[in-house]
Image (tube, rainbow, N blue to C red; front, side, top):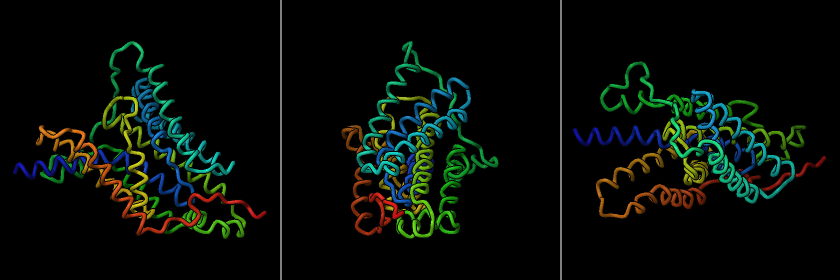
Length: 309
C-alpha cells in the first residue's frame, strides 16, 4: 500500500513539475518548426514568472497574472523574432542576449517592486482542481483529476498544435517555412511573417510556463527560479523530433525525474543533495545526445532566409 501511495504521489507531482517545461517546449516546437531556434526561452520564462506574480498580487487574481505573463512572453518572443527574422542576426547570439535580458529584467524588477520592505508577499496563486469530483479516487484521482487548470490547458494546447501542424494549411506553411522556405517564397507566401508569428507565439507559451512556475507551483518569485527548465524544454523538442505531443511526454519524464530526486534526498540523507538535483539535467544531456543523432531537424533551422524578390 505504501508503494502505491508513493507511486501516486510521484506521478502527480511529476505532472505538476513537468507543466512549465511542457508549455515552453510547445512554444519552442512551434518556433523551431518554422526555422528559428530560441535558446533565450529561459529568460522569457523568468520574466513571465515575475510578471505573473506582480500582476497577481496587484489584481488579486492569478488569471490576470497569467495573461500578463503571456503578453510579456510574446513581447520578448517578438523581440527575438525582430533580430533573427528581420535583421538576420545569428539566432544563438540573439537567444543568449535574450536569456541575460530576461535574467536582468526579472531580478531588477523584483527588487524594485515585490522585494521592497523585506516582507514576504502573499501570492493568491492557482490551486488544484477537483475535476468532476473524482480527485479522491484511489491512485488515478490525484494523478488525472486533481491537477491545476493549466495542466489540462497544456494538454489541450499540445493536441491543438499537433492538429494544426498535421491537418491545416497554416501547419503546412509553418513546416514549409522550416523545411522549404524557398518554396513558400516562390508560392507568394511570406517566410518572415510566418517565422515572426511562430517565434512570438512561442514566447507566449514560455511566458505561460514561467507563470505556472510562480503562481501554481511555488506561489512566489525567486531570482533565477527557472533554474534551467528552459534548456530542458529545448532538449524535449529535439528528443521528440519536433512533435508537440512527444515534447510534452518527454517533459513529463523530466518532471517525474525531478519529483523523484526530491524524494530520494529524504531517503538518502548521507548523499549530497546536489547529486540528486543534477539527475534531470543528466537525463537532458543524454536525451540531446541520443535525440540529435537520430532526429532530422527542420532543414532551415538556424539558417537566415533571404528573399529572392
